[in-house]
Length: 164
Image 1 (cartoon, rainbow, N blue to C red):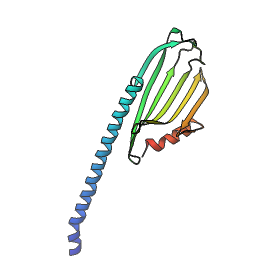
Image 2: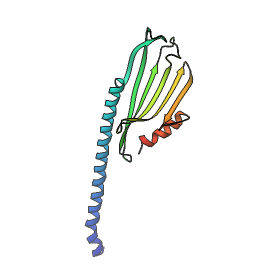
Image 3: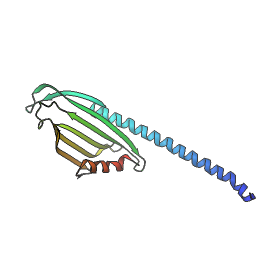
Image 4: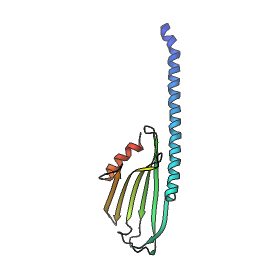
């Protein structure tokens, strides 16, 4: 080993240590941002829908008369802090199940997914599927103020925000 190689060895070791340390700090910062984003999403879901899980509320007929039936909502979410965009996003899913004897036009079973930008307090996109019995009879998809054709297209657009 030459003298030149021996003198560079401590510098290389220091550079290696600095690189490993910087990556560890970056990972810790990323984890902290993800956790803060998750907490923001949890607070948002709690305020907007009563929290994750199942929620029941009374059903009404087409004339707004109360029925002796309940509608069940199932709410869940997934959060992601996008490091490239430096923003927190939440993908909130709401599945609503109505009793089958209710008028499906007045209160259909529905599945809704909304992508929220929690850093700005705005929604980016929404996909809603209305169903009756075993058939889907209406889908609505809007993303960044433009319509989208399908759930697959919605999912592809969501991926830009929910992954780095």
